[in-house]
Image (cartoon, rainbow, N blue to C red; front, side):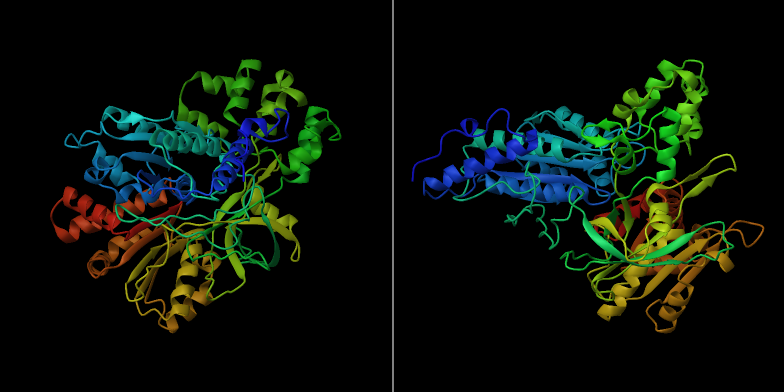
Length: 603
């Protein structure tokens, strides 16, 4: 068999492929060419250490794809959470690729904080022999866009490491830039190290591939960690969601409640999707037709106008974010309407004041604020970000609920008589999807947040409001597994009579012995507000005893307030019970993190 000619001669310049797809095709054809030589590739002499920092599992998935791409090029590869790597281990590595998201206001994700603290120490070893590159994942709607990746990139450079490729900061539509970065970085390392692709190897999906699943997975031969196996059903993605049938939608909260919390069940049918308790499910929403109609009316458009081959009405309903204004749109409106209320707030230069003013306002609100200076339809459309799937913590166990996946979602509704607002996905499910209808979904695995592997280990769960979702799944999972470990749930909301969701289930789990302890905190049932952290302080001695007995401490819910308050309370409990001061408590909590016994699913 003759070797195929160079890739460039096989892909016409006008071929209808994206840059990422062309990159994948180049690797695919090169793999065929390499296979045609019928020569065995030498064993890998260079190992790529892919270090990931993740909050929801996306960076971990990309890390696995990077390892598979490295193996396809004849390189060794292993994926490891950043917190599982010490500075001494880092010093022994030759090639490091970092993939990290950013959490909160520019903070490291939960499984990268200890690593970041460690490499900032004055005693950290120099890294002159290390080559590295960083891929950041983020969202440009946040001020500290991809800040974790930026910080790590700078710190590696400060320690003397050599940047093998420039950092790329990805927005919410990360697939194409991540694929191009992956292909460029791995191709360069393979070329510089003389790696040879194994016969018949092809680049896996996620390495610029237009579709399919990664079939190559590497197992570390030692070192800091191993990669995880791909799950069946992983062909269902953001670009190719599975049309799951909604089979149940029931109200959990009392109709008198100030909140509307609903329980949803989806039939996974023949999707092949397999999930674990602790994973999330992404739901592909549609914007409300009524809101789209209001927006079109304001713009003086019919909706039948065509943009990028589609009617504008369909585009606004299915593909564009019209609830949350983009930063680019805000900047454009300030320039167009310098006398607007928005422009006045921006002129103060106070980020928190701007955030307060923007809270709850959507694109239509801002266009009305700009008055006659607001952009028209053609000028507006480029400023609308792609409509994103919403991720929800799964509230079921695959062992207890085979073939189905459950979600527990609060319907977001706010505003006044003049204008009512509603959440995109939550009210899409509550109001516009009937039982029997199909909804696009795909799995977002989260290996860092799961039921303890040891069925005998104690488990503490803190999940107020809809934060109970994964813990309902945890409890059903442990019951189905026959786990003997004790389970303690801290749950709360505003009022016991109206907001005690899953009351009957939790009572039954208590009576059966699965739920060992249930501490409730209903904040507005008494004059002084009581929260889950209040109950933690009340039970500080017992809570510390559980930790000393090997308990895993898990948290789910609001990241900006609740999760921070719970962590502060946990540190107080540890400091009080150990009696060795704040630094000792902080180190104790760090040890829990290292042992994967303090984990959070926060948003």
